Figure 1 (cartoon, rainbow, N blue to C red):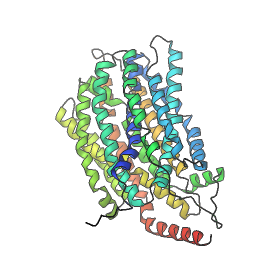
Figure 2: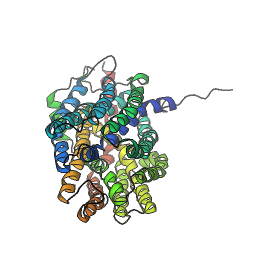
Figure 3: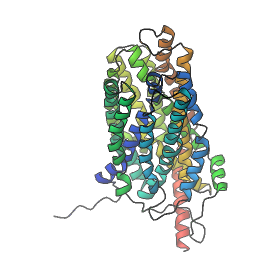
Figure 4: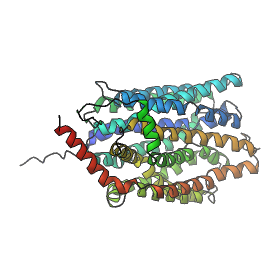
Length: 457
């Protein structure tokens, strides 16, 4: 019997699981970090507005560290590759997360502020920055074909999303049972962080960089990236900022942390949050159709449709109250809408890198990843900051018996109307993204130029 030849454009189950292992670990870490607001307000007894200001202040570091990280990665050239060496940052991210949730309540308020600010900055401004910047750099050098990039971002995304959804189902229940005091928080984060940090390193050990996509001069030599290249890309590629806006809103909404307050004070059942999160699993099989939809339409149009769905789902939350069915239906709708955003944005980063090359610039996947990474982190922290400031303004107190109606209304709006309006804004902005129409010509021209350079060696 003739042995079936392996499709060179297939990723393979083993490599797919290994690649997504870090995505699962990183996603769970970000979800855990999203609980920092309620940890600070209810366990450390810090003022919500003060917590919000601290998280926003930490973002002042990101504008600097993001550009530096992208520049460092774009210049990296080691035997391990360009993006692969920075996978070790997943361990640093989990250690910093555990340290943040280990802050003793007995410390003075200024010391608590320094502790939370320092560890939060380590998580976001250092470790998450490098993990964001290296991802696309690593992927295009580990997988040769665009079909593989699409498969990883769509089918592979099922693995990472399922992992995060399972975490979102179980973690609120664990918080409700274990995180009743500071020591409980510390034990809980250590219990989940150690295995997830080890899982997050599987990609590093099993997937090597084997593809050469670096821009070369007429002599076939790789050109070193310098700060002029960074400036040229940041000022000459407007499309990356549209991708950044998508991620800003996605992380603003996801990491605001209002869902914990909503289910504790409006629905009055924090464990219900896990059940509602589980409802989002229903939307994951939609990923199966993504490659065909992308071939017929485009990545940006699919993400735009997801934004509109997300807006509809969050709008429904306003009328849900504590109704489990309505909350679950809303979660399914915005869960389906969020799938294209969370899984496919890296394909748009690759399009932006192809555009850079087409325009005679360095590809700069690392720098492009840092632009979107910066938007991701700013969105997450501003979301948490806005939450704290608006809760304080609405008269929030961490006592279910004493919380005023104005605070409950604010929590409802932050869980519904505000996210819905932001997602509609993103959908409108994506109408200006014209790069998808140019991609056939861009890819053809880039391939022709590379072939010409290789023929002159």
